[in-house]
Amino acid sequence: MNFSDSEIVASIMVEDGFTTTTDFKEADLIFVNTCAIRDNAEQRVRNRLNEFKSVKKKNPDLVVGVLGCMAERLKSKLLEEEQLVDIVVGPDAYRDLPNLVKIVETGQKAVNVLLSKEETYADITPVRLGNNGITAFISITRGCDNMCAFCVVPFTRGRERSRDPETIVKEAQDLFNLGYREVTLLGQNVDSYLWTGGGLKKYNPTAEELEGSTSFAQLMERVALVDPKLRVRFSTSHPKDMQDDVLEVMAKYPNICNYIHLPVQSGNTRLLDIMNRGYTREWYMDRINAIRRIIPDCAISTDVIAGFCSETEEEHADTLSLMEWVQYDFAYMFMYSERPKTLAERKFKDDVPEDVKGRRLTEIVDLQQKMSLASNQRDVGKTFEVLVEGLSKRSKEHLSGRNSQNKVIIFPKKDYKPGDYVMVKVHSCTAATLLGDSVE
Ligand code: SAH
Ligand code: SF4
Image (tube, rainbow, N blue to C red):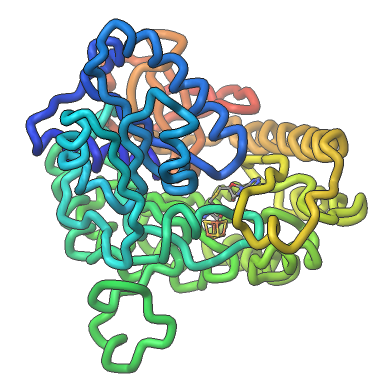
């Protein structure tokens, strides 16, 4: 999502006469787009800012801005804490950037951290940054209304808003015309996408409002219809909101990829309840069963948090057993990190000792490593349609692409090029990658 936001920021600055560079040492203006989801994400931003000190010494006119969630969270405090920083801008105020740069040029510091109930940057055509020309992100919602107890996102990104479907379909069409072959629709909870004419989401729309509305399933169908050669992906699905209509649309269109990222966070119902996730272990299992029933060859990945407040050994074991039951193809796994202002910070004690959190995380990671390898081994001997994204990082003689299930496949280049769809038969694998040969 930050990657996508940076492209919106680049577009706004290019409109104002700036150009982009890939070497920060030659920049007059550096924006650091930031994440606040875990404490270590913020520490990384602070380290990154240190790298810019030497550049500023050489070029005192250099302007440094901090954008995004960490900017929103710390506001003007960030100016006190990081002397180097001139501009602090939250995720809904990017249109103000050219203005703020002009203020800084008069020798002042500038802050805009206003959150909006309408801003979706719907009319802005993102400048695609450092990409492969084949795959691109399209934001479909901003903000989040879910209030999971551990999560800082609702505080840093504000209320949930859906973007006008016409502008989404147009962006997908424009990308296809430029040669792109895959779009990923982005939202904190794509299943809650609902366009009823703009502004904040209405949770109880009237029959009249629903009449001309667009749901996520309907939106995805419209994007899939842009062209059969345009692959469609999306992230993130929320287990409490993912309905069968979305799965049915996925099954109907071969160009909607068979891959769902369905973050579980914990396999224990008491933990899910205090996390305020809105589902139980059984409900989550029912959603997995629905995926298996409607899209039999769908890959599934997840997010897991180890050591959330008051988690016992038995409850942690429930997470391991659920992971095993699902047999995830892939997972992002984290130690719980307490975030200021969140429900958990206000209501619960961060009482699982760091070493216990670390050990639980290791058990989760080890299990997933085994399951990822097993998942890849099951694919050896199978043939997949691969969308080529570029050269393999390790060899100029090999291409890299992904199959519908989002697995990376490496194979000999021959005469194929990025953007081609190639049938590849898998002959071997590691836990992270499939290796194969193109077949007629
Ligand atoms: N909107 C997505 C998640 C966005 S954050 C969803 O609801 O699934 C990405 C992941 O970061 C979360 O799924 C969660 O696993 C993790 N995460 C969020 N806050 C965290 C915290 N305070 N500590 C550790 N991990 C956290
Ligand atoms: Fe955070 Fe929950 Fe919203 Fe995801 S759904 S962004 S975890 S509050």
